Length: 58
Image 1 (cartoon, rainbow, N blue to C red):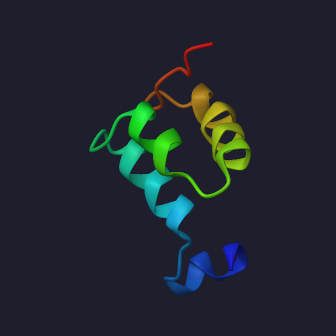
Image 2 (spheres, rainbow, N blue to C red; image 1 turned 120 degrees about the vertical axis):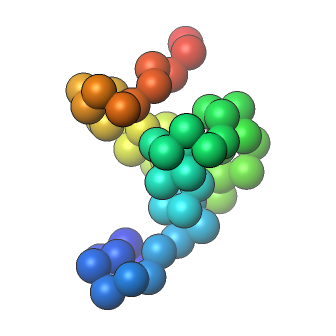
């Protein structure tokens, strides 16, 4: 499924990630609703180097 993102498809966790990056939902909401919390946490953490990303509280 993740390979199909370029075709306009996305997973629920992918949608949560994009909403978080846009500032529409909080990290708490992302983690509360994630299907694969560890994978999504890693994806967010790897995106921290970008200016629009928010740091993950430890």
